[in-house]
Amino acid sequence: MDMESQLKLQAFLDGELPESEAREVANLVARDKEAAALLAELRNTRQALAGFETVLPLPESREVFWSKVQREIERQEARQPAEAHRPSLLAQWRRFIISAGAIAAVILVALIGVGPLGSGPSSTEAESAMADPGAFTYRDYSAQATLVWLSYPAENEIADGDTPDTLQ
Amino acid sequence: MGAFEELVARHRDKLYARAFSMMRNEEEAIDLSQEAWVKGWQRLSQFQGESSFGTWMTRIVINLCLDQLRKQKRQRSESIEAMEEESGGVERQMPVITVNPTAGLERTELRQRIDKALSQLSHEHRTVIVLHEFEEMEYKEIAKTMGCSIGTVMSRLFYARRKMAALLVDLKKQE
Image (cartoon, rainbow over all chains, first blue to last red; front, top):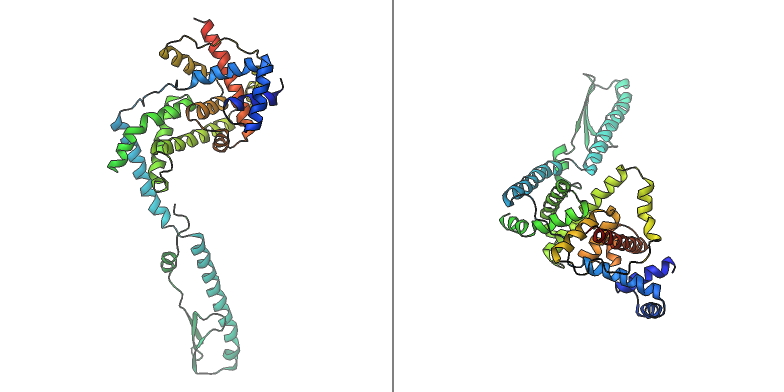
């Protein structure tokens, strides 16, 4: 008997064959002694196992086992809020973009400022940089000073506003 | 948490027994059943009541045991013996056992022999026996749980049963 037939015989025993195939196997068992003997062996083993699992009691008292489970639950729960407050990848990415934007704005403002400074106007001037509406520039030509205010949200505001994507 | 403690008390022996039947190691079985209870608590909201709580928890411990067995298997070097075990080895040529090796045995004696024979199977063969015979899972469900094909489940179950038959005959001869 080939392997496929042997496995079909087992599937027949376990009730896993469709009706048409089950009929075929039943016919095979009826005419083939080897198939019938193998089916009997598989059936004996299955019957021996059914309901004869050794049930071992947990070798720890209820109190000891529960205290270990409880301690582990509490330990993992204490660890989870800390992980939840860690900034998400999105928040970190936004922080990077804002920082990079701010630096770019400062450079842009400095480049724009070279022209008027060179021509020597003495008045003061306040302007918003075109490249970044979050940057505000105050320029005192007489003192040859340029101040840039960056009105971006604080890091904690960004982090708080995001839905944490690491919390499970 | 008091209600959960009650559930642990009620089902802890069954979960430990299932972990032990798969791992055959007391310490690992305790650790894995403990881990299963922690996971059970964390996933309590996912329990839909489609099966009993005991069955749901048993599935958790089975998955943990399978993960642990996979880890151990990766660490073990593949021996020829292990490869033979997987493909059936000597069971492929084993003659059919015509006598029932468990006939006439007392329940306690039968239970002891089955336990002894099970302990001599490979992890793969024992797991498939446990899932099919004790957890009463169908081939499809076993394949999903073990992460293998239905064909592999059928083949493993076949060789596991044949080996069990041979082991039970050997134990009978040793009387």
